[in-house]
Image (cartoon, rainbow, N blue to C red):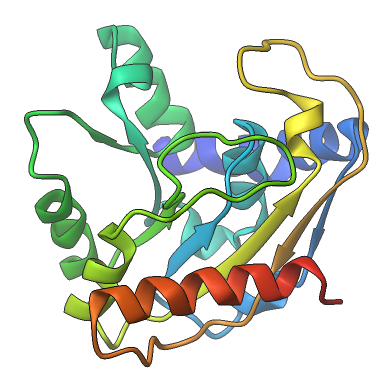
Amino acid sequence: MKLLFLIVIYKVVMPVLLRLVGVRIRHKAAYQEQKQFIVVANHNSHVDTMALLASLPIRLLIKTHPVATANYFGKKKWLAFVSNLFVNTVLIRQKDNALQLLEQKLKKGHSLILFPEGTRGKPGEMQAFRSGIGVLLSAFPHIPFIPVWIEGTGKILPKGSFLPVPFEAEVKIGAATLAKGETVEEIVGEVQSAILALRGGE
């Protein structure tokens, strides 16, 4: 039942809505040969998560989880339920060991969508990354990361806004890459550079 919900939302409804508000997704082929990965993107809007889920092939939908804070999406039980059912989220609560929870998902063969900035930033700007992505990729060196640069969605649905406004936006998906860094800090820098490289790339 949940898979059916996800297919209807992200393969039927969401592509139409994204086109209407001006979002263009490029290089979906990055997922074609991947069974497991960690999508890593900059973050300006809730539209980002919707666009990334819509970019996935059907076979990957049910096992790919956006990571979100329960402080926002888990304030009420009904909101947490809706978030899990329609967005397939992994909700992180303050009392949780966040990395342990994410590691459990990866050990089961699932994939993650992470926004290492930790919160939605200003449109067109990327904040410093938190170390979690480096820790995960260091612990799972066989799992590739897929860098994504997102631009324009902060104008479509800015932080604090509830009604989308059409604006030209782009989601650039890079190639799946195995981290080469030897330390957490090196891996974080590697991921950040891969995302920024997409900003000016084709």
